[in-house]
Length: 345
Image (cartoon, rainbow, N blue to C red):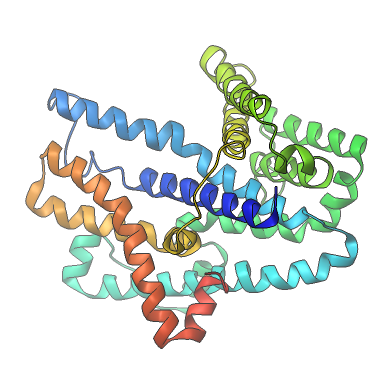
């Protein structure tokens, strides 16, 4: 696969995963006071949104871990460590801090204005240095950034991870130890064991299996991708409680892997510019979809149709408003845009 084709597929995969993240957080049946007993339409809507939020959407963040790891360790060597760290400081650490500060400031503002406080259910947020520090370090006002916090830990651990993963056998033993930590539900300091599995598996693939990941194999590749999806789903369906949460982690690892294997075998159009802004969408979508839902509930509470239409509108609006924000900030506040986007598109 040529480099341009590889990058195009990375953007498509990121776009798909980001849309799933927005779908997870756009769940609104409960906000609209809809229950299983409300009506058949409400029941169907609840089950549809639950499938996205609790099943399909749960592959999104693991998929992002895998993309991040693969790109970090693709063509990696110890000599490139500091340049990799330097680029991630700007693209991940700086936006992590800036966004957490921005969200804390926004919550302080909403808490101080009665109308916004009533709409957002935000109250009692105080402005203080200790609370600001908590907002930055604990992402307490920006909970979706738990992913970036875990990713930062994994990036900092690069020398340790590479020492194991660059050797084939030792790397496999390391992956086995990570799976054991998942099976025993061991917390590795501040790092989640399942995040380590997703990240380390993709890093190992980048170091030892680039041909498998990046080369098209035709029908064999399609079958391999389909088998990967099926074999990762079956344990969760048949033995969900066996060594829990192993079946769950296997599903969240295997489905994105299988989808990538299938996707690299089929032609895909060139990704559109607005589809590349997934980081900005990830950073802003929660505020957007919750605000839209909260406002709509004021007029359409109890309406199944309104809840369904707004669910679709939420996903479209998250990308549309993010693209609008990119164009405005990129033109009029370019330095600020670079800070919050990490220099991305």
